[in-house]
Amino acid sequence: MDVSSAFGAALSLIFNLDPQFLQIVGLSLRVTLTAVLLAALIGLPLGALLAVARFPGRSALIVLVNGLMGLPPVVAGLIVFLALSRSGPFGAMGWLFSPTAMVIAQTLLVLPIVIALTRGTIEDLWSEYREHLTSLGLTGWRAIPTLLWDGRFALATGLLAGFGRASAEVGAVLIVGGNIAGYTRTMTTSIALETSKGDLPLALGLGLVLIILTLAINAAAYGASRIGARFAG
Amino acid sequence: MLTKRSLLASGFGLALTTSVLAQATLTAPPPAQTAAPAAQTRFITVSSTTSTTDSGLFNHLLPAFQAKTGIEVRVVSQGTGQALDTGRRGDADVVFVHARAQEVKFVEDGFGVERKPVMYNDFVLIGPKSDPAGIKGTKDIAAALKAIQAKAAPFVSRGDKSGTHAAELNLWKVAGVEIEQAKGPWYREIGQGMGAALNTSGAMNAYVLSDRATWINFKNRGDLEIVVEGDRRLFNQYGVILVNPTKHAHVKKADGQAFIDWLVGPEGQKSIADYKINGEQLFFPNASQPGV
Image 1: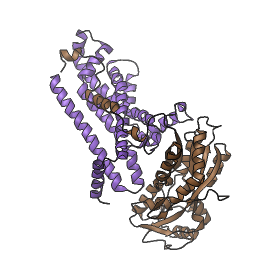
Image 2 (image 1 turned 60 degrees about the vertical axis):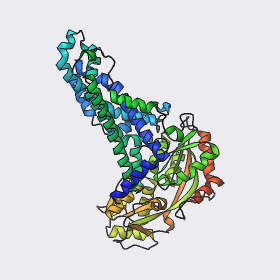
Image 3 (image 1 turned 90 degrees about the vertical axis):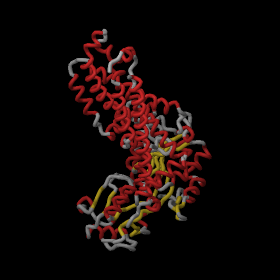
Image 4 (image 1 turned 60 degrees about the horizontal axis):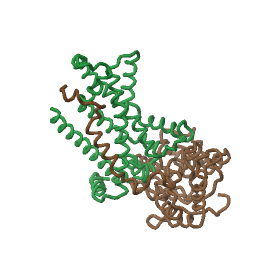
């Protein structure tokens, strides 16, 4: 096995636009971006609230969230698997082995990252602008929308970290998705499958495509934030 | 910087870039829909073994079945032990595996309706060309395993409660080796699928038991080759079972049964016999053979 055959495999995957391959890439992006969006909707306000609110047990909660950033994907997958299994509490939904289950598992993985990084960012902004905001009548939770808007570029980096975690992940989606061809097979589970079939050039080729996609999304986000920063003055 | 404009801005300030990206993907027609139309699709979930998937058999069988019945078959491939457990939990409608004793128990425990034999292939003992145990060419699997143990030649075991793992443990018993006591550093349990076991054996110059189908389809052979084949004790029978709808009410009884009937009927059996790689037949249908 040489690296050039992997590059060859990657190039032919990209340029042949094989429908099966496009479907796998599409599903990977759909699942990961949906999970990041959900984690953002839940995690940004929660993280900001954790930054400005003061309540007993706050420190413990911060440590817990920080710790959960290291939640092993395979454990997250197992928890979601047990919850969604027909023999589990949410079995009646029939969600196991579906893209929905994969989104749930990845949201669980991304959420602690979004909450923890949002908390850090907003806490810094809050300590810097607290007096200013309070003088404008924005105290406590009412300052949250303003703080989030002001920290948006730093927060975008947090979301990209979450995206990276989700798109690179294989353990959780394999357990809850089942790697079903044409339905729950993603880039990472395909790479695992091709490796087990001994087709290492194809596996590495898929890996290269995944890296290129991740780079492209990061570049797009970086460019957008640069343009945004210029207009925001 | 905190500006007037940013003070006026409201909402949760979803980081602009990511939300735009996400929405673009969500609103764009998902490419998945061409291959797998959404919820209204008629489908069953089948938990099966890594050998049936890694060998490419399902890619050959399922389109023919779907064309005839309109039923999509979603295959989750796991080791036989895990595949049966998936059925036991009610997460599959049909299980299609290869470990007869476990299958019979699955039905006896009430989790399956009836076990039907479908086809067989055989196991082969794979090893490095250097052949450190000196067993190449023998037809006697028991003698070969004994020699491996006696010389403490590296051996990779699946160690994952799969059908192949069960068969391997049984063969040690046949060879008169108490593997639990006899195992040492030469005996390496990796707890992974067939393909991973072959990759590992290639890297460690170790012997490994594989089903023939996965071996034929395996591309990263390196220095490995077949060292023992053709012993009747290497026979590998596959069975199919409908998960019991009285245990799990949501089991798609009619569609699952339709798949089983097709597999063991003339069309499915012919389709299995027709599956070849490089002119070599991988699975041999035997649904009508009694007592297998």
